[in-house]
Image (spheres, rainbow, N blue to C red):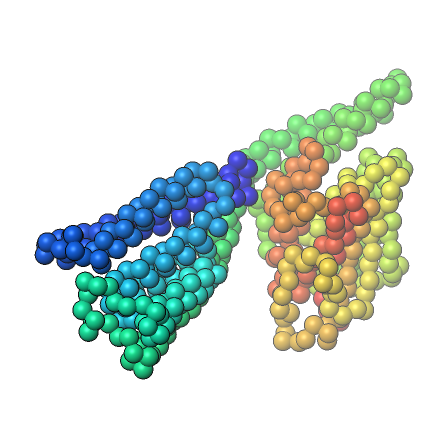
Length: 459
């Protein structure tokens, strides 16, 4: 939801449009009434004319009330329901004045069902049908029981008042209203689903375009940035070996070295995200890969000082899986790096490897990011041996408002974070999906985060 916009912005827009359509319909009814009645000079004696003019005038006054509520922007769904109910009351009065059970104005009941579907969806169509059928049934029952009589200016022969005579038109009109309500509700639901899919497609197209722009920028800047970074890094290494430096100077050199490495990693992330290459899967020892990443993480600026410990838990031997070794190493490194950065002083990051299991266990409370992936070869999930890689930290966890956007580009849970590392992770995992690679995340605010990769054992 965008900040600064009321939550019912879409409904308000539809309500404004429907209100204008309603006024247009009543204007046409007013013109038709004037043509049919005033042309015969029956204004003073026509009960039906006075009733129709009163209904239309009341509807215009209600339109002003709708506009006032719309300007306030509150209670819009209640306003929509009220409009539907009042419209059905209006149509009932018009049906009474224009023929009762056999009046052609009964089509307006179905029109309100359509408007309800447009405004609220299936619930609006069902609500409009329920109110319309109830009022129409009461009207017809009133004629059949003698509680209602035709308007005094209308011919009694134009109205069906016998219980047996009234059954057929009531049944036909009821079936018509129900059919329109069901169809309108179904189409409204399909339209919302299609609209959501279209919005996602547009978002993916916008992301692709943004990444294409980023790729062009990154390709042009990477060389220019890395050249001076290499010179800085080499100069600092040479300077750090000078015996004339005191402890303060060496500390400053370490800071420059760390920041240079961070900038170089940022450039690498940009290149990986903007110019991806297709994976080349092979038989990879992911246990050895995990041990290598843990050893590398032990030399970062936090783990190297004992601030955060990165621990390996898993087999000391081999655990093979089918993947692109270089890309999976990048995934694991990005996850470990994020876990270290999210951890507090003295906390631990656990990197676990498990082999010999079946399909990854996604519990109901865990939020799967890529559910429902079909596995290659037509085999069932239980028949495929899996290798799991897990990275767990005990940091602040992932807030609910960030969780749905966690893997988007430039979205970061840390102040000053670039928001590229997890975007690279998602892109690589998505590219590996045809090879049986899956991923899920288990996290909540204040409970840390656990990222679990499930890879297919090629044996």
